[in-house]
Image (tube, rainbow, N blue to C red; front, side):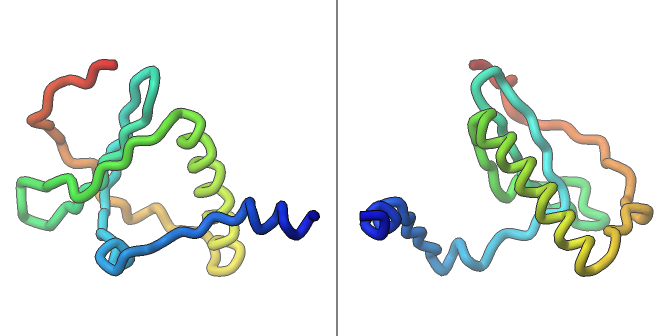
Length: 105
């Protein structure tokens, strides 16, 4: 009976080839409303004054909190294996302007 319940709880996740390639981002912009968190992943290129959002992920506040905890746990494991992540050479944040209307919920 326990084995049957375990099989019913398994989640089969498909990773299409075009998604598996991933999208490189070196800037994340996070905003929120009372119902959701919006994460825009941007690729900044040196000497190019315009950058495009490469991916937008919209999640619930509950999932945002689970994601934050999962990232913290993975960063802890990474640093335990590879040493502290050096943040000293981060470039300053560029000034940003968005050509999108204000979000409303």
